Amino acid sequence: MKRLLTGIAAVALLAACAPSGQDNNDSGATEAPADATEVTFTLNWVPYGEHAPFFYGIQEGFYAEEGIDLKIEPGSGSGNTIKAVAQGQTMFGWADTPPLLNAITSGMEVKSVGVFLQKGPASVEFLADKGFKSIKDLKGKRVGGTPGDAMYATFPALLAANGMAPSDVTVVNMDAANKIAQLAEGQVDAIMGFFHDQGPTIEARTGKQVDHLLFADSGLNLMGLGIVVSDETLSSQKELVGKFVRATQKSWAEAVKNPEAAAKAMVDLAENEPPEEVLVKQLKLAEPLLQLETAGAPGVNTEEQWTDTIGIMADNAGLKDAGEPSKYWDGSHAKGDGS
Image (cartoon, rainbow, N blue to C red; front, top):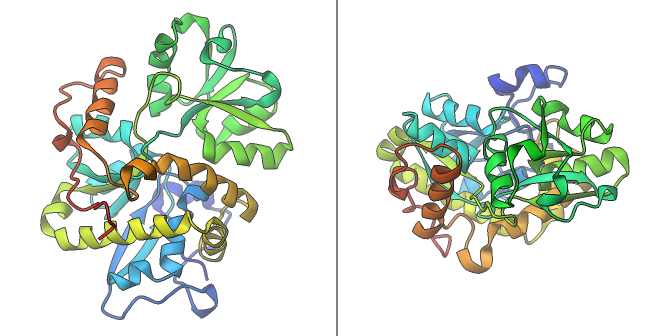
């Protein structure tokens, strides 16, 4: 039986799926020791290839080696995942950095213990036959976005960084679950989304090539997704936090060496995941975002990276009382050598 638990936030979306539960011997997962600590981990969204390392870590026993019996739950957006962590509904979350900054300045007592996708995956995606080469090519076009998410909030700043006004583009409000279909059907010229998730999905569904323009390559380089934990857990279960971060670092480091095996683990253990070949493409596209050549190991950040992201959010996305990186990030657990 598969390993993905059905979280409350995703019940409606996954209602048609069979209920999930504990893995058994035919899942290929390494069993956690009897005295392991059960840990819940809520994703930013329903499973896609970026999440394969977590399932690979379960299957290969990286979490079990740290005394962790990991239960993975689907999410319904980074904002909801962060809220669930803050309210004690889940121990750890996988969430995007811009909504984390907003959550903390609004009073949520949570922190990052390491951003893994250090180059943000936020992008404008479109069918390749549109031929867009820069953000300026979007002038006069219709771009789909979801109100409330980080990309929607920072899109005006992206336009400004490229010498454009908000009136130069028609933003079409869309539900997150419908953006892919509406792009494929030609209702909009482009959508805001995570290129490594949606691009391979659109290509698999339509047979058409998808291209994208990264926010990070177009004047708005914000850090992406990483591990979120509550301040209470950080203070009361410091050792467990360190073990979880260490196991997750190892899971990512090994998964990007063998994305096919990681994708297979996700097929074995997850629920409602994309086709295996899509998972492989999604994970391979995520790998460069780790910036391993400079970070040294997955999830290792610098003060400068955090300062830059905080500054962009304060200048362009209405982040109030921004403060220093320590307000948002505890870097004591994610080590450069993964130890």
